[in-house]
Image (tube, rainbow, N blue to C red):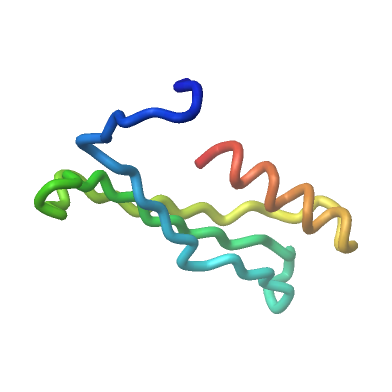
Length: 79
């Protein structure tokens, strides 16, 4: 943590993109599908050093708006 103002520059940056957040109610048991892509990028050249996609399919315990939020929170915590 740096106090403002500062002139420090970062060498790397972490980029993330939410690719999918989907509630599947067509299945016998409802679930939340979550897919997230992460990249580590070198700032001075924009070179992607590493890239990974995380996916999870989390069952919804109680089919309600709150139950869906709980499933999404559990999926996020695991990823």
